[in-house]
Image (cartoon, rainbow, N blue to C red; front, side):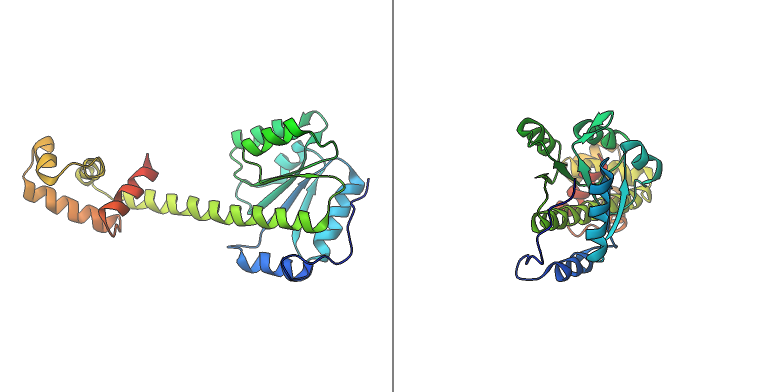
Length: 227
């Protein structure tokens, strides 16, 4: 079946081409729309639409084709048909998580399955669109998915950076980090580690510098990312 596209649709006061440019300019890196849809005509219609908007898209006819070609590090979103041969979209959503794909999902369905849509949203889907798709609604959903993807990329990058900082600590500085983050005072830390309070202060100062912590609250937030 084809996709129901309406003529040039305004989204937030701009036309679709302007919207696509906004999506790209707001992205950390150019993002890719991954389409998983077994209906070839519908799949090609989506590719044609995104090409007309200068948005990068790649289409797959099945989940297995996606897993064979898609990288876990690709930026963007997944546009996923909820009913696929051999596996439904909800099962595929779970498989993505198992395999380490951290990519926002926009579901498509021609059946309007309310229970399935609720389960998909609970599992973290960005949106659940009914076919025939409306262009403005589709672009809005992709925009939301891209925004979520950028946030998730930044969070993952921050976690990696915090881990790098923590790995630079000595064994004693690591011990002090954990005790400071648990709320102990220098005197209590000194007693627990069997060292002087002056040494605690020295280790604490070095640890704070290496962790690039601007405050105790900042240090605790970083520590929580390590656990």
